[in-house]
Image (cartoon, rainbow, N blue to C red; front, top):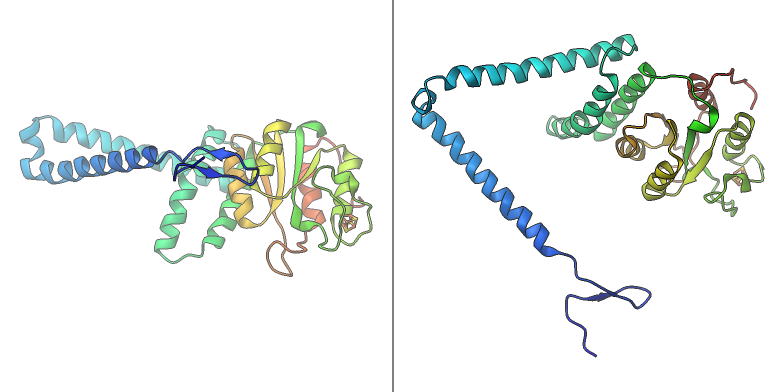
Amino acid sequence: MSIPADISINDHGDMIAPPKKGIFISLLLLTCIVLTVFAFILWWIPYIGLTNIHPDLPLILALVFGGMVLFGLGGALTLVFTIVRGKNLFFNRRIRGVVIRILFPLLIVVGRLVGINTREIRRSFVAINNRLVLAEAKKISPDKLLLLLPHCLQNHLCNLRITGDVNNCKGCGKCKIKDLVEISQKYQIPMFVATGGTLARKIVQERKSEVIIGVACEQDLTSGIQHSYPIPVFGILNQRPFGPCFDTDIDINLVKEGISIFLDCQVDDEP
Ligand code: SF4
């Protein structure tokens, strides 16, 4: 039997339907039409003149743009106050949403244009996000907290499968998983190790936690914070003495500090 050119076969021998190219082409055409209309309006309005379209249009546009500027300035000031004071002002959760969904992607583009390192912007974003999470922090029971770790924390020579169940760790002490397991068991906090963003998202969806303490590199933390919204993620950056994704490390005291913010109990110095 001959197979149509646009049908492919996966590793299990199943036929896979061709990707829907039509969606992409339609979106591309739509974008072209919108851009053309937008370009025409940008040329047409100054050419004709606002007053010639409608005598009240200059005033109406001034009010609309003025309102947008005031809204933007008000939001920016509220954000700055919340970050500086570390206190929940008003609409804190919404502000966190605006920072995560709109401001961060925008600032990445602007940062690139002016030559700021993307990694530095991500670090800054994690720090700002943490301030906003702290501003709305409340005490919760341990089972509502989720400790999410990257797989690269596990020593590369260890063959134990800790992604399914972190308690499979035998506690040899060659990596910080040992300390983290002890903390998770002592305070009864659900803890999971994720091999990547897909598994991390699955865990977040299934657990339905109220707060997540996430350990990862800048890139994974920022995408985790974005995908988990509206669940607040308190981010802790890992250390990479051997380069990315290999035998990474974590300051256990930072994890304990994070836990003590959200749990209604004292977290000891000893695990
Ligand atoms: S502490 Fe646990 S995870 Fe780390 S190397 Fe030892 S047994 Fe493996």
